Amino acid sequence: MSDTLNAFLDLMLWRDGGQRQARRNAWRAMVADNVRARARADAAEALRAETAGVGAPVSSTHGAEGEGRVLNG
Image (cartoon, rainbow, N blue to C red; front, side):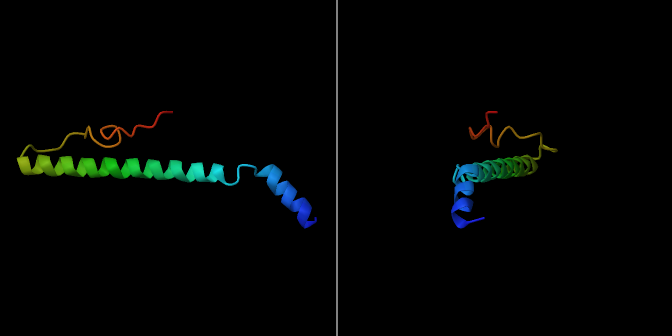
């Protein structure tokens, strides 16, 4: 195929200009951030519980929800 035809097909098939992939990357990054935030909050809660002599820590109420970063949908 000619370069012109290839360019036209690329334009027609991939009209989003990479926006779809960028959205996927942003979604994956947000999910990874939420996982790290939850792990940090749980570790902090476990440390507080351990230093206070409370015993076994309970599930944290912190993380993505506590920081207002809940995913809708």
